Image (cartoon, rainbow, N blue to C red):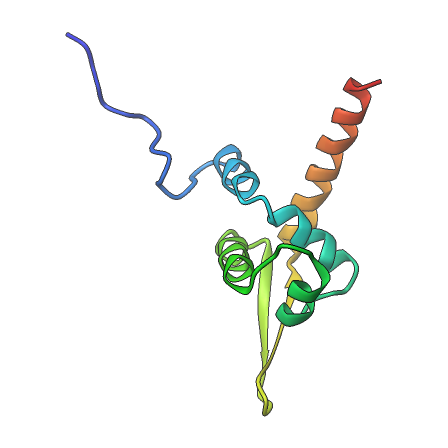
Length: 111
């Protein structure tokens, strides 16, 4: 008898770090967002204006996903007009360091 039960579902929330990485990389803008935050471009409007082809809707989806994973956090200021900024969390800093190490590994493979 063949067991057709799926162990991993592609649309289920990632329960392991590898699934989280897969989900982040599936969003082609996540790495760009990390780069923007490293450059201290942390307001949504400024992010959209800084990247050709990035729309507000896509940015919001990307930011939401990264907030859910705890990579970045949203900071709301009680001002008029409303002000929102995004910052990398301590976990996010560790996560981004790992991504940097993956990039270094890729560079070594291309030599």
